[in-house]
Length: 157
Image (cartoon, rainbow, N blue to C red; front, top):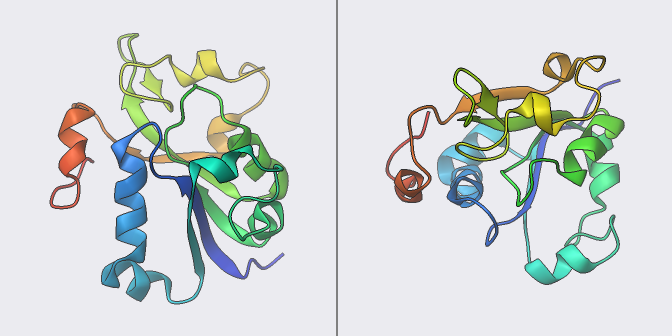
């Protein structure tokens, strides 16, 4: 199946982690627009829209757009597991996650810096090969959340 959209990024930028806002800023910048052309759907959702019906986020039918998108970057959330992660998987959209150091030595967290290892945050990790269909290329290794607040002029990666 050919996907007409390269990516869908639809997040509440006032929540959770400065990396969400940075990715939005990059995607709507001239550089992001040149990279994506019209193949990226980037939407900033308000905190109020998060309380609407699951598919009525902003003005986009999120499930339908995910079904037509190749990648779905997911900014860090308030909890280790996110509904949108599973929704992207079911829609066939490759989840792109952020990779942080975990509180367990030599483990990685897809949630937040020094968060729980992703292996402990996902159900049935022993039998579901999450790392085969989710991508976590954005490494924030060795960076604190505070240092990522100035991402507009620097890179956490």
